[in-house]
Length: 81
Image 1: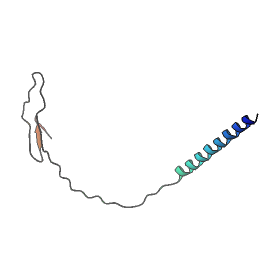
Image 2: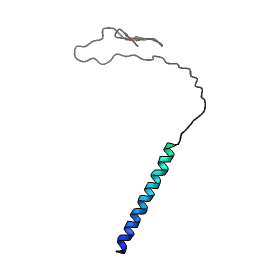
Image 3: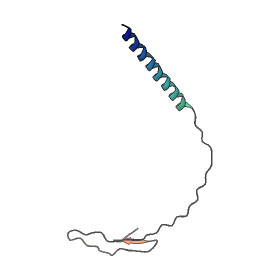
Image 4: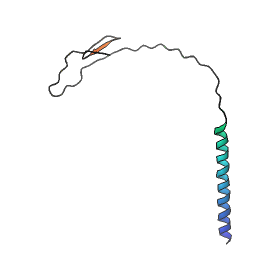
């Protein structure tokens, strides 16, 4: 009998503890979060095409146009990159 009452008390206090954690968590997520500030991002992009190569052909496939490129443009199979 004593052991059963002890288990019941442990379960009740555990459930009350979980309930309190849920209340605190709910209150924390219900508060309004305001983040104020400014930022400035400056950048200098220098993107260049450095290498265009033929793929590996299988079967009777062949490249109709040889790929070519410069630092800012590329051409592969008649398509501009």
